[in-house]
Picture 1 (cartoon, rainbow, N blue to C red):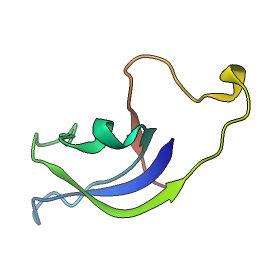
Picture 2 (cartoon, rainbow, N blue to C red; picture 1 turned 60 degrees about the horizontal axis):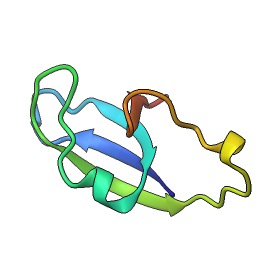
Picture 3 (tube, one colour; picture 1 turned 120 degrees about the horizontal axis):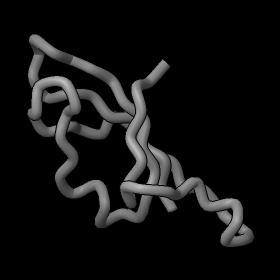
Length: 67
């Protein structure tokens, strides 16, 4: 599982997000604010030892505003 820091590709928006999921989940993510494509500025692999530790819910890739 990957953890990523993302930024909106629209310079006028430039919203930052955090997300986690499988590598294929990061192919096309869209900004919640303007709808432009999000670009990853950093990835980190996350080790999960049990299913209950997965930070999953709905949707499959969870996206939240970066601090």
